[in-house]
Amino acid sequence: MNRLKIVLFLLLFTCSIGCHSNDDEETTIQTEQKNPDSEEEQSDTIENEFETVQNAVEEYGQLRVAGNKIVDQNGDPVTLRGMSFFWSQWIGKYYTPEVVEWLKDDWRCTVVRAALAVDHDGYLDHPEREREKIIAVIDAAIEQGLYIIVDWHDHEAENQLEEAKAFFGEIAKLYGDYPNIIYETYNEPLDVSWNQVLKPYHEAIIDTIRAFDPDNLIICGNRNWSQQVDEPAANPIDDENVAYTLHYYASTHKKWLRDRADQALSKGIAIMVTEYGTTEATGDGFIDVESSNEWWEWMEENHISYLNWSIADKNENSAALKPGASIKGGWPQDMVTESGHLVREQLRSKNPPPEE
Ligand code: MG
Image 1 (cartoon, rainbow, N blue to C red):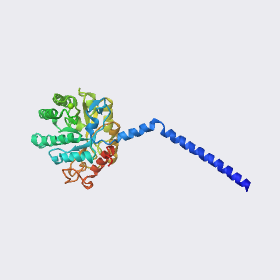
Image 2: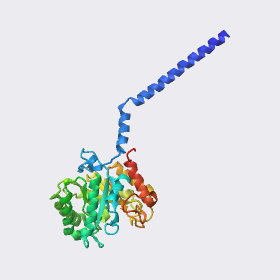
Image 3: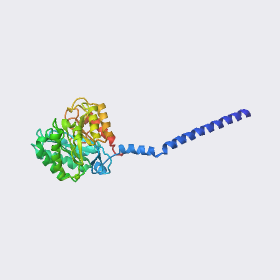
Image 4: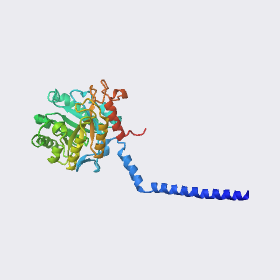
């Protein structure tokens, strides 16, 4: 019995040494993982990427172009994410302070876009009526600390140069001191020359804006519904804070358009996606989730800001709201469309709501 006890004791002793040495190994591994700065840096990076931003303009301040990026007041690349309103003359009912506030608080937007309808019974025929809608959204965006893109929503703006100059001159005079304002001088030109028509058009508007506002961002549309960013990349506008519009609809436009944009970026211009849809280019049809995700990934990688088309309750698939959704925001889930849900989730994942 005694011999057996000794053998058992020796076995236990050996085992306990073995177990301890395993513990020591684990402790060493854990220490190695926790010790270096790299892990802390990594988790910081991840936290920053999804940082909760409650007041975008307070956070980022005066934006500017640096190389092929838009950067904030500290010189760090900034990606704004938000929603575009619909043509102001057709679905102007959502141009309210309450909707802007809801888009900030619930949809977690950092930017919104007011689309001043020019033709089709819009601003040219009813200047005061349409202007008031844009002003209401600008004032609300300033109140909420959001960036606001003021968009001349037109397909033939070169035919209304004087009207566009007068409008942007007034906006720059009223709001040029606010870092919130971003000017979009021409939504989607058709098949007209960049060098001969579009560039001179933008330059004329830019001169007018710069007389009152020397520094805020100006985003310039280009040929074929703002899909030929290669043309301004080859012949850019001589102004420090100009970037260029890229529009896509995920179901129609795929990698070939991103490849074109990559080439334009490599030539040094900055790009902003002031309008995109999850659907076909018509604004209706198939909602392409896979392609939407590919676009979002690409824009995040490249720090390209993006705004979804649109805050509307029209019966088409790109509309974010169902017919009759309130003009005061506060939309319940069942008043948000399939596309609206997809986009809202993307916005909330990138700018999480503050913890209660
Ligand atoms: Mg300014």
